[in-house]
Length: 181
Image 1 (tube, rainbow, N blue to C red):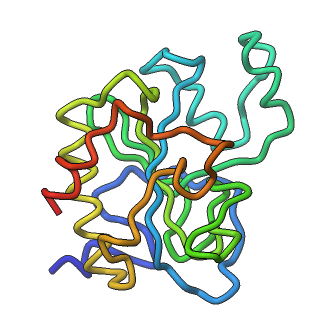
Image 2 (cartoon, rainbow, N blue to C red; image 1 turned 135 degrees about the horizontal axis):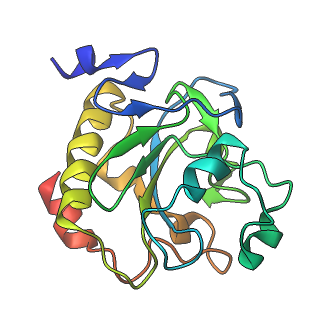
């Protein structure tokens, strides 16, 4: 039943918004799930800028804080908005560009084998009931469709890029999330 929700790495419950910022996974492996958070501008929610960033259409002149994003090519597989809306930018079977310089269990280049889920939020904002519900449902479906993603292979961006990244931050309830899986 769950496998039927997936077609070529696209999740049937997500709004597809294909990003140009991806490439092929070198070994086709999908074995790590990375939880992130994002808001553009920082602390602002419900705006179109995250999607524009992932689609490569962000006008970096729109806000002074966007200047550092000029020329950046980044994407995630999924974004869960504050209201629980789920959008997908890259097929799970492809490599999205979300982890950057990263290492998991002594292996670098986590984008090669990871799925990236972005939660609209900040390290300290907390996340909504709708986001947790969607994240849990999506994670369960991912784990069934891609069984190499075990509970032990679900991490935060801060876990694979310590000192460089802090998300999903202390506002994320890991205990609640992992117990629900």
